[in-house]
Amino acid sequence: MSTGLIFVVIALMALTVGYLAFRSLRAYFKLRGKRLVTCPETERPAAVDLDALHLAKDAVFGTPQLRLSECSRWPERQGCGQECLKQIEVAPQDCLVRRIVADWYAGKACVICGKPVDTAEQWVGHVPALLNRDKKTLYWDMIAPEKLPEVFHTHSPVCWSCHIAETFRRDHPDLVVDRPARW
Image (cartoon, rainbow, N blue to C red; front, side, top):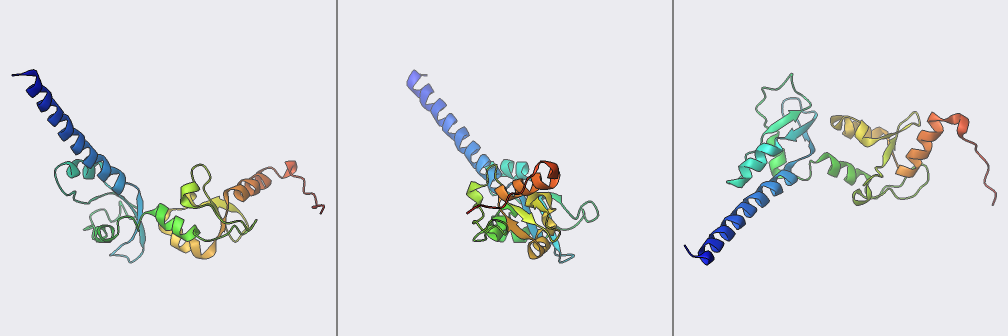
């Protein structure tokens, strides 16, 4: 065989492997993450995870078949038919917990300082929080995903800066001095 032909064969093999790896990684990153669906059996919210590794392997050779790896209703209902997967097939991105939370915060202002809450793109390291009825702040990801729809009705949005300040004020009241503003 000539050197040129060997080079072409190796290049074609590398392109094929690269393409298959791209398909696999794209499926993995597109379909990973906690999702919120309505359980068909109980008609209640349920937090589910897709088996992203299985999906990535399937995507190499065709259309991946969706299946769950985790559900907040398991282990009690682990033998279910996984009919909730139809909701994910219809709108895979719309049921992502992070997307649902970002949509809830969109256009809202912090109830403490009044500034707009950061958009989801600005959340790296500065995740917004919630203010409960007891006037305590907590991060939204500290709440079980299946309880988020209820919590959104009873809690108010708080920006990251106010959450940090209120947490410090709550945890270290002896180090906080309130001084009236001098205008």
